[in-house]
Image 1: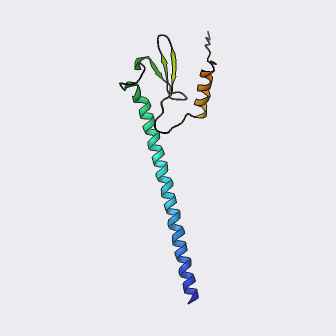
Image 2 (image 1 turned 60 degrees about the horizontal axis):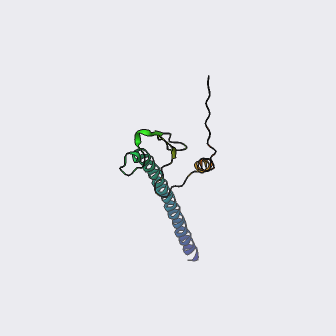
Image 3 (image 1 turned 60 degrees about the vertical axis):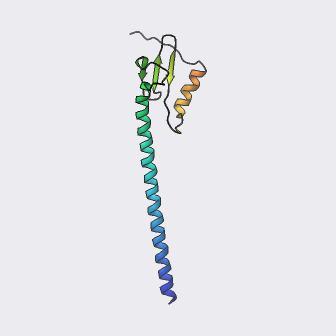
Length: 114
């Protein structure tokens, strides 16, 4: 009798472990899909935002780079580096470094003639 109870208990525990593993796998897949959708939405937003009525720069004076900075705006009296972010996204380490260089006035002009 005890053997049957132990065998049943082991089977129940095995089934529970299997379902927990399966649920964790599905949760990871859903998180991955959600992140992928957020990235795609971010890329689309980056491309369309210059045409939004509240965008503060003239779209025809923008140059799209994409990486590591989204846009450079070439105005008549200023040049602006623009990074578009949506949701809770953060600047990458490379983007933070570029921002730091710009704020510390470490942006230079170089002309190379061949």
